[in-house]
Length: 193
Length: 102
Image (cartoon, rainbow over all chains, first blue to last red; front, side, top):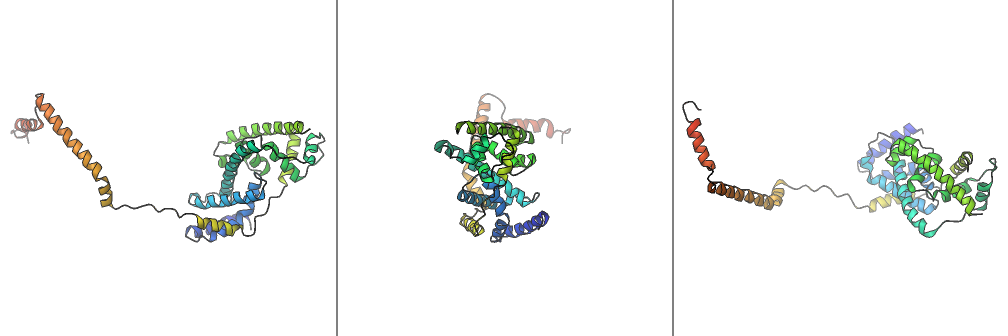
């Protein structure tokens, strides 16, 4: 099924839900749950927390269903809701992380980080753990921009809409965030020696 | 940390697969939705009830205006300024009821 077909099917489903068929929302959840889980996984590595955040995303979407005007595909609107849930979560986690300190990092990631050989590869899990650790140095908004741009491959316009900021502000934030991330990675490489 | 290495890190991290949603996730969401308190319907108040609600305030405002008018009239009369009724009779005598008037 292509994206146009999905969008039109979503529109029919939404029409029925608005008409009072609450049970049909479960079908909408089934269609988009994988995407929502994938988005939230970029901000939280604990699978149980991801599930809680995904449920919060769908509950928020349910409450705000009246605000969805259908001009953009439902999938895009839902992704924005998920991004906002992720941002709130990062803000809460930032406060908590300041109290509990940093997690341990595997040797593979540290070796790769210290190694100047550009041909050496890092496995996906270690890369994600290393990024997670470095991104803790970033503000929640900076982390959101980097994650959306570099890991989800979103355009500046999409990020601007999700954050309620201008395109220029997103570009500037992305540039600064990347610089902070680079510094954070260098700091990890030195500190863990 | 150069740009190339940072890009390599992003590319590797992108490959990490997210955890799959549990089989009954949609049912759990629906259950949570059913637990949500129903949205309160906007309360419709009949016109008479609205007037009843407003009556004490309207009565107070009307009384204040009447008292102010009496006080103003008394004050102006004491100051020697012709009262409103005097002014009206003068006006009708001078202009309205003359042959050139209406």
